[in-house]
Length: 70
Image (cartoon, helix red, strand yellow):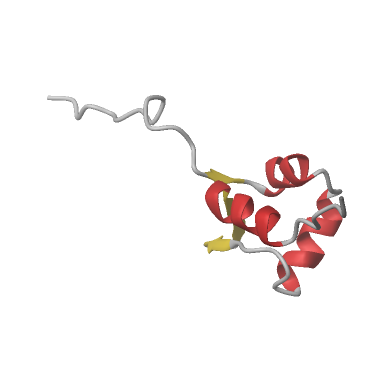
């Protein structure tokens, strides 16, 4: 009997890799690595890989948004 595999297509991805996070933030990959190392941007370590929570990145953007002066 074969074990059924579970697909996460319906779940939606919550964690981004470094390239995806860089694209999401509009930064270079090296800059994202540097900011993660300096703990300037929130990340999760999965084994040796860095992953970036989409919701945490959204909060990061909101917290660092500079409002315009009207």
